[in-house]
Image 1 (spheres, rainbow, N blue to C red):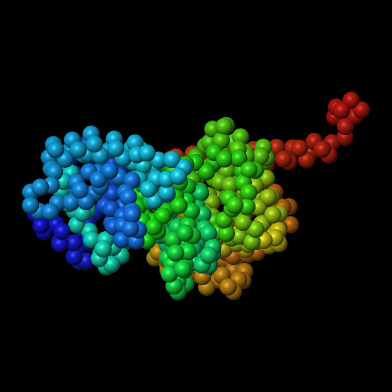
Image 2 (cartoon, one colour):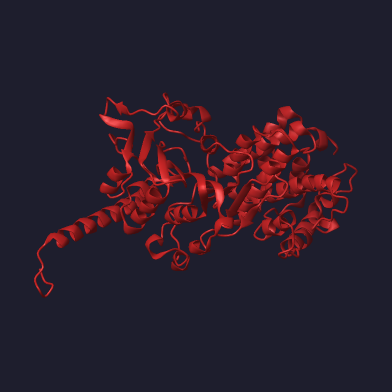
Length: 505
């Protein structure tokens, strides 16, 4: 029984997820990838949290865990190899009837520190699916075999965790919480973090943007004060319980002692109530899109910005929560660029008149494959002055790729053409299609064009094959946009027609 404590050499850490999957395949309670990953997630959280508590105990003489002693990982999960560890029905009964009810009902109030409160918020909606206590013991042993005290193991485990998050993409509904690392890393790099700045993601999913920010910022750490500032520099909100749990674990794994991540909905707060203390130096995010919000959510926004489309609402949240002189990089679907309905136009007008929207990167359609085929863009803007000109750059598929996929995902190097262009911007014309791959437009030109930002896009020579739901969403967006355009032109025509005294034409 002892071998599980030592068999995690660096060479076979990579088989970690596969071994867990193989064990869980035999459990009748696990139905599919999504449940398997959710099961791994809560066990992993408790293991990581216990390792973190060891650090806190070392640093604080009077440290008291929020978790009752019998429910702490070290007291029920660790197998000493002497046959004392709970297994089978005893383990199953403990987890179902003691552990879960205890963690879901931990006493938390406004005075509870974040690093303790996260335990209850993590377990509020967690599920225990396994029905075989012997298999559950095997899973726990594999996870307990990772030594977070060993720098190499814990460092490598960051990559293992990344592979778990990537698996979410192919587990169906959970893919929406994962932005490819190549994209988050590129955005963090271009935003140029500085020690002492605070960065936020108001729909943070599994925490990818925060991790990319921390990695980029860590290059500037010179002393313990910088190191402390690093951990305190990130802030996130996540509405859904499962990605929230993954995010907290992700940040603990990346050395953030007290993850300032909150389980809640960023859209349920009146944007006009935000003050300077609610604002951040930097916003990095990929807002949920394609979703539709209820009317009570729209009530938190000024009438002209009250869209039912989630991405629009998040753009408004960012506008109200970005500090003066702050910087933002945000992923937005094509529908926002070409949309000419009143709300989208109002948001874009506000963005151009109060912010400097200086760059829009058009990304290839398959970046988020297989989760969605909808084409997305990165908007870079600063809260400094009104927009004078916007540079557009179309990032084409790299040579040898027809599209990105699970086995051939987007990599950091694929952004190299943008990096080369970024500091030495010039117009680029595609001779084959006679379209611009890169070009700048003035704010006046954009306004005259009805705030349609669908410029330097992909020439559609062949019919694009989209998943049915993506296709329906794209048609709905384009229909709404065309209807709004028709209404605008009709209004202009009506205004030009002569009116008689009675107000009739």
